[in-house]
Image (cartoon, rainbow, N blue to C red; front, side, top):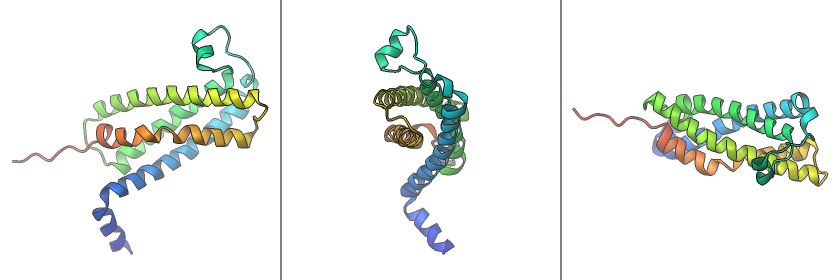
Length: 170
C-alpha cells in the first residue's frame, strides 16, 4: 500500500500537491471556522447588530455591523497564518527565500482578507437584514466566503510564493 501511494505521488506530483493544499486548507478552515464562531457568538456578540458609524467606505462596501467585520477579519488572519506554515513546510516543501515568500504571502493575504472581510460582512449584513441570521446560515455563509479565494490562492501559493529553488548546474 505504501509503495502504491509513493508511486502515485511521484507520477501525479502536481495533483498530489493540490490534494495536500486542499487538506491543509480544510484543516485550517476548521480552525478559522472555530475562531469565527467563538468571536461571533462570544467575543463580539454584543456588536453583531451595532452599526458601523459615519464611515463612508464601509457604507459604500455594504458593511453595516461591527461584530461581523471583526469576526471575519480576525478569524481569517489566524486561518491564513496557520495555512502559510503548513503549506510552506508540508504541502510544497518550499526552499525559496523565506523572507520574500512571507512578504508575497502577506500581500496576497491582505488582499484576500480584505475581500473575505468585505464579502463576509456584506453577506452577514444581508442575512441579518433579511432575518436569516442563525448559526447554521452563518456557518454556511462563512464556508462559502472561505472557499471562494481558492481561485487565486492555490496558483499564487504554488507558483509564486512557495517555490522550490531550481537546482544549480555545476
